[in-house]
Image 1 (cartoon, rainbow, N blue to C red):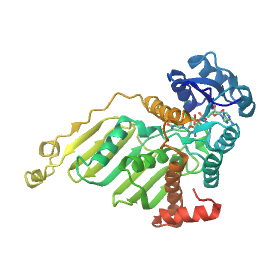
Image 2 (image 1 turned 120 degrees about the horizontal axis):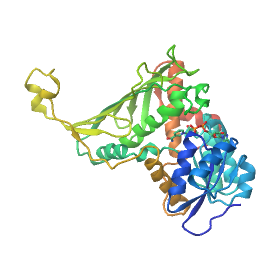
Image 3 (image 1 turned 30 degrees about the horizontal axis):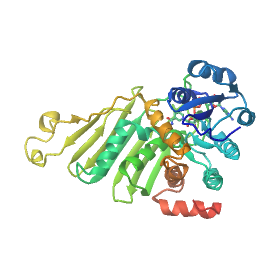
Image 4 (image 1 turned 90 degrees about the vertical axis):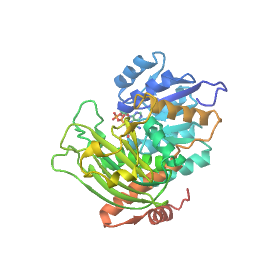
Length: 371
Ligand SMILES: NC(=O)c1ccc[n+]([C@@H]2O[C@H](COP(=O)([O-])OP(=O)(O)OC[C@H]3O[C@@H](n4cnc5c(N)ncnc54)[C@H](O)[C@@H]3O)[C@@H](O)[C@H]2O)c1
């Protein structure tokens, strides 16, 4: 069953009750303008646990197709492994439902293009799980890029070192055997943040990926990229799930003409430095804090990562479902991030710089579509 009820309370059917789906169940159940209409997962005990915790009255199903006919819904959130996304999104569109699907929309570019075309044909919204855009730290960096409060943005340096042991019981399993797990599952968020916060599209890049001998992943889980953006901004990226230190080490530093922004933790701790040119002419220049500008913490709203940022993304989705506002975190926008991922893979395989324009042209001419 489908079709808007006409009220302000959107009924959301959730597919997938794994690590991510449980978060979605909570966020949907707690939203003042949404109802968790049901949960679908072939692992029914999982689905029941999520249901019992967050929406005791919601029905649980183990198969998506019958769930779509039995459960009245206005929209669907899909939090299943990437190789199931295309089929589930198509089924939801066939029932006339709007969809928010987790990233990557698909690990196959032809499926991504197909879904964008189908969304257009069906007149349905298709959003993607780029929730980290809504972290207060991300919003603040974007604010500086827009406002030019620190002058023009010049270059960025983004590093993410994590020892993410794939054998942990509280992590998903499918990433251990998928191709390019770091690029498609994690770096995809970081590339999206660079695009979104710097408000710029990648013009070209050169990338290398590799797999350290002690990795728990079958394929490459270290990614190094040098980006040139269309507006002249440069960024240098290193991300890994196979670090040799169990301390999460995140640092994202952005240089502007008038100072720097440095995010020192994954979801928080953003400081601003106002550049004092005169200071560079004094002292030894190597004595650390004593001879440098003092970093000032940026005021950031409290945020529980994966929850509060997801609430904001859900709110964007609900505004689209109700016809109140056009969404921005769309599949069409996500395609630009996936093109960056694709360019990384081609650069690694062929060696050398890749022009995003060329990667896009090849893909679109191969698919015969024109998103
Ligand atoms: N945006 C984020 O912050 C974020 C964080 C983590 C994961 N994710 C994404 O969420 C998705 C799921 O990741 P996860 O970590 O929860 O994986 P997971 O393996 O923990 O859970 C996936 C669940 O989907 C179920 N499932 C599989 N096929 C299904 C189908 N056809 N219908 C219904 N349920 C089905 C599985 O039984 C499992 O319970 C992935 O695309 C991942 O990249 C996003």
